[in-house]
Length: 180
Image 1: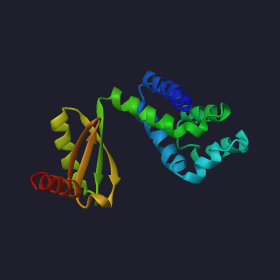
Image 2: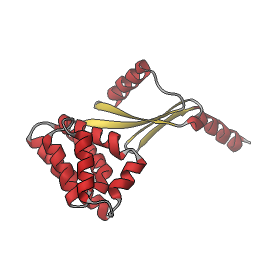
Image 3: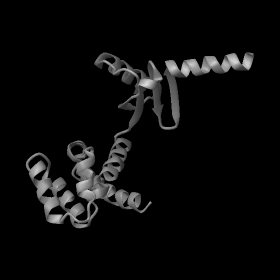
Image 4: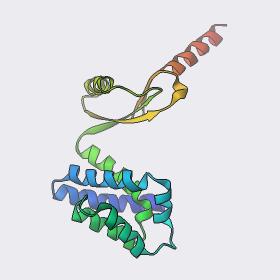
């Protein structure tokens, strides 16, 4: 709970800075790069969460990894997180920042689960259809799950549309057992 509160504090701070500079997309791009290049790697997360690793070593690694690739302000933000021993909650900060950005830009995130990857055409058609239904901009977050056998499961907020083969089979089984 404390980590979420701290992450929210830092995410709001960088979000407000990005809004003041009218550069939400730029900051989002920097934070996404950091997340994917470092904090999506379990061994890297262990390194940054390890209290025995000196702050200077963490800072040097971040500087080598991102010098010239992210803005100076984002780099300073990373250094602050290291100094305050908060770099270990970067992923939470990133998720909260992304949620704030999407909300500010009127974007809904649709979690799409599929058994087989979508083609670019299919993805584009899905985004158009969901945008037409919701009346909002849609961003897709993809998840692959072979257990659904085929089709899609789309979740937007608390709404879920199960168009998967496994879901249809469960529905058929359920209706057969009720009628029996």
